[in-house]
Image 1 (cartoon, rainbow, N blue to C red):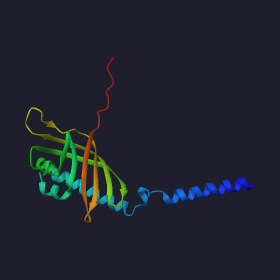
Image 2: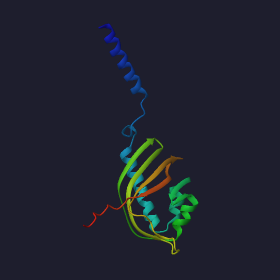
Image 3: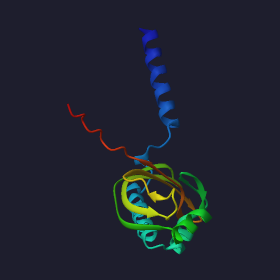
Image 4: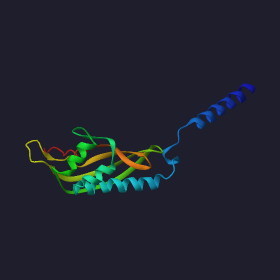
Length: 164
């Protein structure tokens, strides 16, 4: 009996120690709902700016060390230059936003985007992949949220059944 009590006490002690060291969950970080709304609004504004060739918006929106994967990596200067011209965004939709917080100053926004966009007139130019799952990583620096990383992954079209 004495051994059982020691085992139970030890197990409880380990559990309490483990709980005390656990990282805060996403829900434990303050203001998740408000932050999700704020970053979603910023991301939606970036789509308006993308369609309107508003490079000044992206100068403010992107962190100085921003990375964008678009067939290959591009930095802030490349993204801003690309926004200025070369692509025509006829239409777009963004939805299914979801926020994951990694800490008080780091948050990941994922969402679905579809667009009818054509870039350039060169032989290798064409439509931008659509629809995609988009990922935007935000960092808070100097009291404001900035986009540090953008990546999108094409959503494959559903397979059509073979005709017999």
